[in-house]
Image (cartoon, rainbow over all chains, first blue to last red; front, side, top):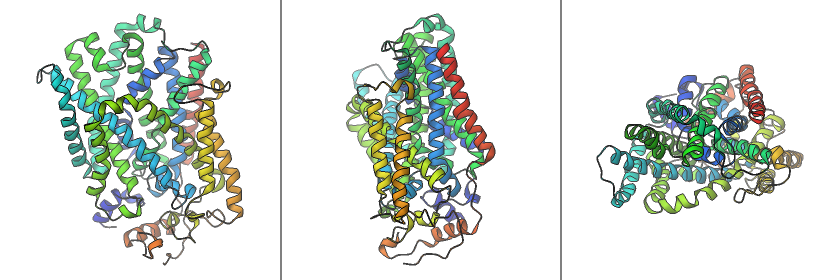
Length: 477
Length: 55
């Protein structure tokens, strides 16, 4: 394989060969930690702080994050790491050679939404940092700088990602320091305000303590389910599956609850999850400058990883397979830039609703992938069939779509909404005992399993003939 | 590029797929990976939940 081919693969949805996967455990851990640790951690912590105190909230959130991470790892992990493909390509055995567009849309909307939020935060933090450093005066005209800084951030991200996955890893090596700065910020707040922190009452707590506790767990599960779109593009760079579990659990699942504690503590004690606001109160302008630098850097690193994962996902579209990497990056960055430039405030106001609805879909998606890989296929994936779309191909199903996956996805989403309405937080009596994500994933898995029995009986989906890697001649058109 | 259009797979992609088809199937997580997953994804969360509930 030539160097040019390796570079092409790095920027494509093609399978990466083991020799091309150069990310060891440390490099993968750093990259995943940089991806996971961002401003959203404060928002997650603030959400938990509405229902639980510091200790209970921290433990519930940590448990939820670890459970959610295992779901994501079991769903996307095996296929992505065995064949060096991204999360979207790994859905073709379940959703079909055309049906994968559904998870692709979910990925695109999710990543664009998250990255729009982060890049707006980045721009606002940079303005505040300039004010704190005395480079800018306080004033309403500073708001006009946000679109300018958004464009600047997009240009920098574009430049970094022209180097493909190497760019992601390079930035991660530098920005991982912000995780430790975040922990230092947490130490400051906890050490200086401990009595208040322990005594603080969550403002939105329900009289049902179990409901509050389960909601803390659910928020943790939901937060880490959001990593599904990211994880494939990262772990495909690791040489084999044996080396990814610890990096994923420690690099992606652990930093989120740890950094969320900053938002949780801030929300409970100072009624603000944003450390750029409360560090000025707790530690003065010097700490404010450090925290602003941290927030700016954190958002930047995560956005780079998100844009990269999204651009790789676009490669699965036939019309975009021959486009240059530069074109893909522009297509991916453009919506983020448009949101950041034209509707930043409107997007902030509606982001909670958007995020809740997106989160509903990833639990059933994980359930479907897990039962398909481990129960129905028993690990037998036809890598060639993932890239072929003709009617006689195994993953063509019916017109390129597997109805079992679509029905199961719908059933899983419906189950989630029945257990917990993500907009109103109305819930069923069983929700405090089961959460909403776990029944949703289970329902989707069960429906998928039963419906797939009919698919198998019809001889579709490659379940009878599908094999991981038997020698077989190339398909001809 | 797909078989819908009657075109073969790109040669580079074809070579990659053949490499996977010829080689023995790669393992997914391995025994150690499964142990870590059970520990970090099930056992420790259960302990955390119990501790948090009684805290």
